Length: 192
Figure 1 (tube, rainbow, N blue to C red):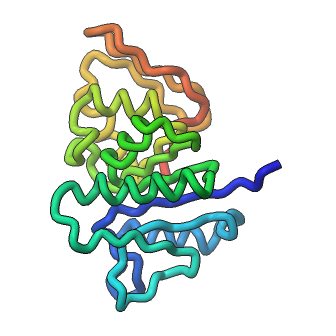
Figure 2 (figure 1 turned 90 degrees about the vertical axis):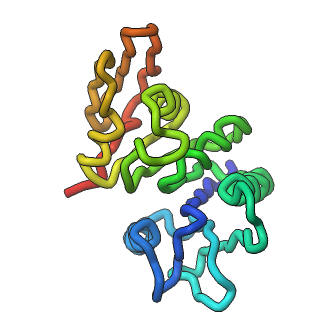
């Protein structure tokens, strides 16, 4: 049996260093320090060469010199590495555009997404249709607060949602008969 491996993709603007770490970096470092899975987890990010990463399991994705579509180029580099290393799970932080790229590539890994900020302000999850697509095509979606979770479901005027952690979730948009597949435990709140 192949050993399971996990890849974590930080936003390319996130600084995974002691001196300049942002919220997502601190969250990942703190989570890994307590995780039984830290030995099979690799963190991917974009770090300037003179900075040391927060953990030793870090792989730098260098996109210096790239001007256009940095996030797509960044995610493509991760994608190519994931094909080689055959990760079982890819955890993406706060970049719906990266998640959508991997979904469209039909990567053979479970996809987990963590929203740290308002989903409606991020490319790839601004519309209700985009957020329903994420729910339908992601193995699990996490929110760092109830406020972020509420923003994800905001403007689902004609949608019914039953967001109970570790229970089946059904979302139905009654305006165009769009339906979110039932998924066991896809919605988690990472609060309290």
